[in-house]
Image (cartoon, rainbow, N blue to C red; front, side):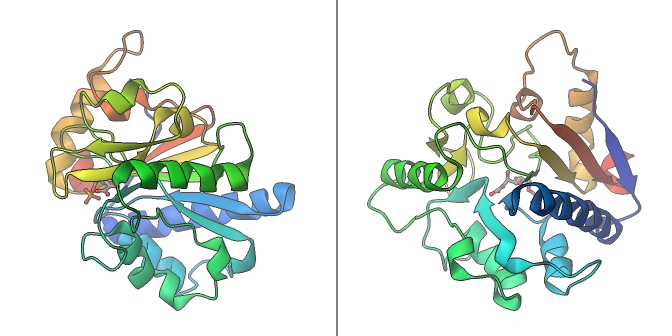
Length: 239
Ligand code: 6PG
């Protein structure tokens, strides 16, 4: 598959580069549409970029114009150690003057994952309207078996054609998760895949070797957003 790839010596350099590009997209989105919407990823890789953003590196951020969403979330309380929201709160949100109304966590306090998925879709519809959202930027990670967001190999959510958010069972801890579906992820104006560490080499090679003419075996290869996609790799992942 054809992947526009940038390689950086380490996670710190990668994170600075992602932040620099984020500032560029943010500025343009605010100039054109008055606001910047971003779907954030969980996992270890983006945490450094969130921390740099919180420090104000690169450029000042007009936080009242920024809207934070999540590409996926674990069905755990928002203060749980496994919560993607919690990770973002600790690295970014707690340190910047973003209005509470601009932070849109997945409501994992509801009675079931299905109810949380429905409520999150309703929240997205309130913000974006009736057409599937085009996030200005979506950050995605890559799992060693090719998952992105919480779309794991063979997940029925990969075939979803209507719903924007799905409740899924993941072969990982914790198994109950919520994820944006390809209905949304394939609309993104900008999509950055953030990949670090040598345990990602094999899956990156497998993705690169796939032919564009066939549907990918891997969820990561099934996300082909309408806008620009860029892969940010550290050297360990790229070698
Ligand atoms: C999650 C994620 C997930 C993650 C990948 C890569 O909630 O776990 O959003 O899709 O991005 O598992 O994670 P690492 O950055 O830790 O390798």
